Image 1 (cartoon, rainbow, N blue to C red):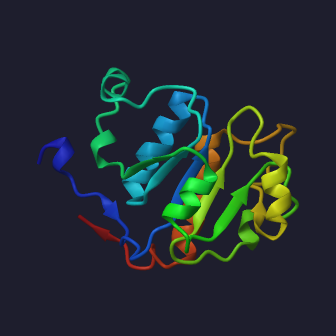
Image 2: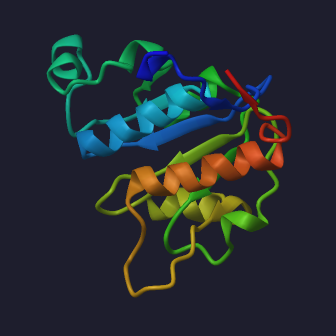
Image 3: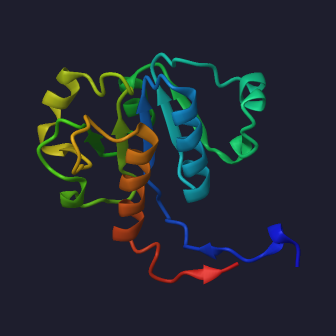
Length: 172
């Protein structure tokens, strides 16, 4: 059996997966890592606002993102445009300055997991407008926050765990 033909441990896909929403991401490597995560977890990735890089075919190919065709990618001019496109998606915001842990959140089908730009996070006015739906990924050490891609992964896996995706794993 060739190395790439070996079976992998797989979870079941969710009927209505969460939306990963990155607001004005600045670092292409982080977005590339999140895109790979989105492809691996079969959930859509939404890039909102001004990006700090290009996602055109040439840039993606140059970055070696061979999984990019597997990403369900959407771009929106702003968060309001995302809301128009997905009016039923409940916004859950993630910020290093939140007072509640992501472990307190109860995730539902089609939730939008919203993360801000690497340098400053989400805008204060957005956080203030959604105070009941703002969560943090806690840390132990004296850092400001986790890397964006790592924070998205931590939260996304909790969504899938809560929604039972890992209850019946199989080798395929």
